[in-house]
Image (cartoon, rainbow, N blue to C red; front, top):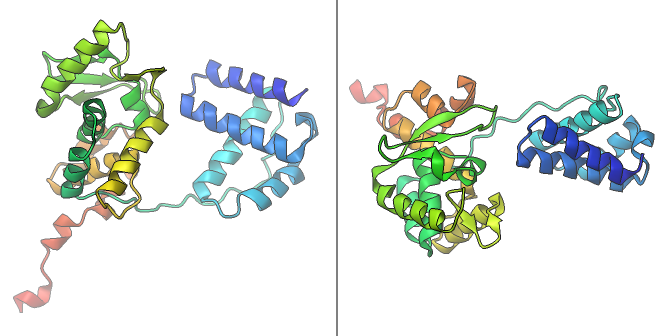
Length: 275
C-alpha cells in the first residue's frame, strides 16, 4: 500500500469513528512524519523503525506528546493493517504539570487590549465559560437560549453535551453577534472571511495581545480555561461544580486546580502566630 493510500484510509477511519478535527490532524501528522522519515511503504515499517524515529525526533518532547504519537501510530496500524507495531514499546508516565494561570487583573488587562469587537467577545466568552478552543469555535447560533440565559456545548471532549450560563455582561454583544451571523446566513456563532475559524486564529490573538500588554507568562487560549477554573475555586465554588462546568469526566482532572489556587492558602496563618 502506498503512503498516500494509507493516510487517506486513516482519515476515513478517524472520521467514521467521529474523532475531533484536532485528533484527525494530530494522528494524520504523526503517521505522515513517521512514513516520511522511514521512506518505506507502511507495511514495511517495523518496531525498530519506530524506535529510531522516536530516538531522533521525540527525545526532547514531553511525555504527553510521546503518548499521543504512539496512540496515533497504534490506531492507524491496528485499523488499517491489523497489527500493532507499538505493542512492545513502553509508554512514559504522563506528567502532571501545574499549568500557568492568569490573575484576575491580567485577564482584565488582556481582554481590554483586544483591538476588534468580535475577538474581544470570543476571548471574553472563552474565559467566562471555561471553554476549550474547539468548543468556542463549534458554538452554533441555535446553541444559545437568551430567554433562559443558557447555552449548550455539543459533543465536546468525550462526546458529551453540557450546559453553560451566558454571562450577563456579554448578553448585548452576543445578541448583536447572533444577528450579524444570521444576516450573513451563517450557522456558527463565530466565523471569518474564509468560513469557520481555526484554533490557530484564536491562539494568535491571545498570544499577541498577552505579549503586547506585557504578561510575562506562557499564554494561550487554554490558559483562559485554567484561569476560569482557578478563579472559581478561589471564589469558594465547590470543586464538583467546577468539574461539571469544565466537562471533566474524572474529578482527579479537576483537582489539579487545587494545586494552582493560592488565594485560600494565603489566608492560612502559621501556628506560630497563635503562640
